[in-house]
Length: 120
Length: 107
Image (cartoon, chains in turn cyan, yellow):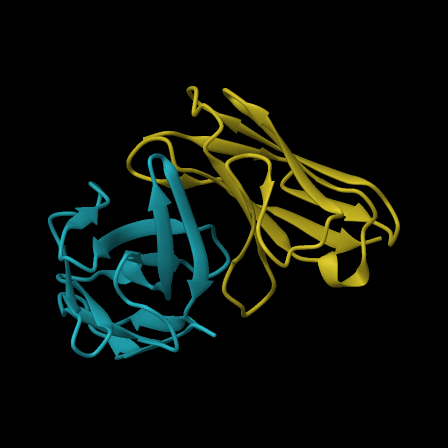
């Protein structure tokens, strides 16, 4: 049974860098894409970025200038960095496992979510 | 970015009702639409992919249809555990985008 567990700082000040890590347990790490999606309180979902186990990355253009993803295949972990945060970045951040084939994109396993609050 | 517009934004229904949720894309997305269910405080759960394929383990009362720009999620007989928010998502063009959600409430 695949489980994703995520951790990182939950309270940031404006201009700081958000750093989150997601660990993958109980399943294969290779052959999948690994994604971050966020949800501002009371609002809808926004895809942030994803990374293949080989290291290829894809970013949402709206966030691309501030986002970096990395992967550690030896630990079955992947990470998200979002710099220069503002209160607009306050959201629950989810990590997810993604199966991709052509235009298919299936987020079939998700982490528990972390609320990241940006406040001065 | 591709806009995904869901309607209604919320609805009230009773157990046993047939429920239909619509999702319209701003441009054609072929059949590359997913549907997710989200309960309060929980991560989204994939229900349907590629417009009409039921994800493993999802009850057969859920079904999806559509192609091009118009898509529908149907719950044939609403159960107590189905009260949640539902999101459509297009995976045809980058960036991937979601609809605004439809909240299904108890009548």
